[in-house]
Length: 231
Ligand SMILES: *Cc1c(COP(=O)(O)O)cnc(C)c1O
Image (cartoon, rainbow, N blue to C red; front, side, top):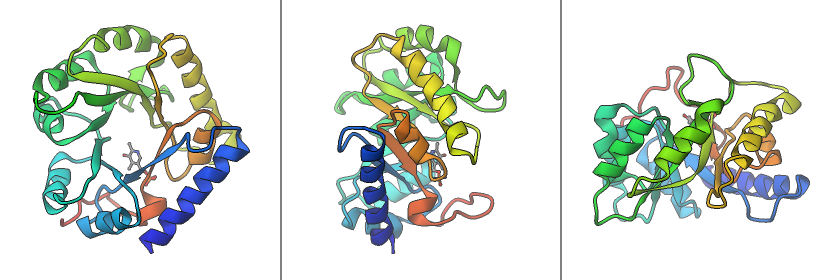
């Protein structure tokens, strides 16, 4: 089941790359496995998937222990509390949800020296809703310039979670705006645009996504309350 869905999604990604004049292979898939058991991750891994995204620190660490023999690249994509940065800095290769200088400082300071620098994306609030986490678009250049000097992090790009929207043309709008602001950062080094989820990933690819974060379309619906898995 998961292997079939994975293949379908990969085919659809290649298709969308062609349809929107993106380079073949420009878009990679982050499999979002939050609330799903370790055996679902193992099934996707056996079908070739290597990058997995998790939102809850302890849940992710439990799965990492169960899957220790697998060569998985773990991405943290959930909201970050200050008291969790130490574990995040130790247990992940990527963090997509960095939304303040303070959190970035902590992650850099707490990254163990035997590990390569932590790959990070700055989470940007592109819908302008007060409730959503993320850096406001107007603050992005200043925060980017402060965070990019930290020693144990590599700022790879930006991440966004727009407000849900059904209409394809409307889904594209916030991503287009964000890409315009990013172009103004004048940074050749940014190579990761972490946009697009199960409901809008084609629109995200149309606007320049390089990494779509897909959970539901690959692993099936999560519990109504997003319950954590019994790993
Ligand atoms: C849960 C989650 C996803 C995956 O969402 P789906 O709609 O299930 O594909 C992607 N990104 C983030 C930040 C998430 O929290």
